[in-house]
Amino acid sequence: MPSVLQKARKQTAVYWAPSADGFDASGTPVTVTAGVDVACRWQDQKKEIIMPDQTVFNQSAVVHPATEVERGGFMVEGTIATVADVNDHVASGAQEIVLTNATPNFRNDETNFKISVGQWHRV
Image (tube, rainbow, N blue to C red; front, side, top):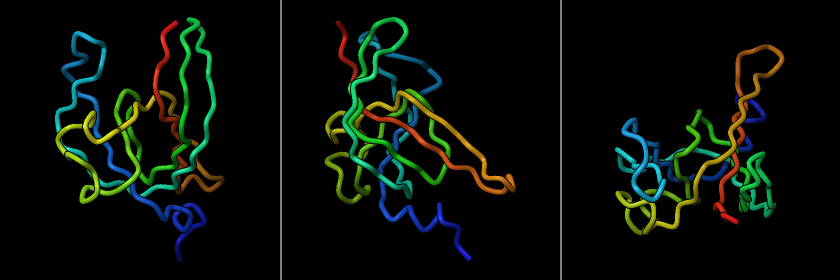
């Protein structure tokens, strides 16, 4: 029987993982693979988050993906079939994953992943 977390993941997002090669000249993570579909719960939620170094992150959504995703990757709501270019996260309108959290349930047999996606606003 599916858990409550599994039942809540009725949406799909496309995820681009960050490269082990690091970042390009503008500070954007270089992606190594084409996007992949990930089952998730996508909640549009606008929030301004001020980081300890005083940079500002404009969160546009909180996402609960079915699998662990990496900070510095990119994600957009939709499927591979609906994004503009599965090989180009910028053209597809993907947003950066900045905050990640993983919380196991009480039996420690399932993990709830929670991430924040959005854009940086450098002051």
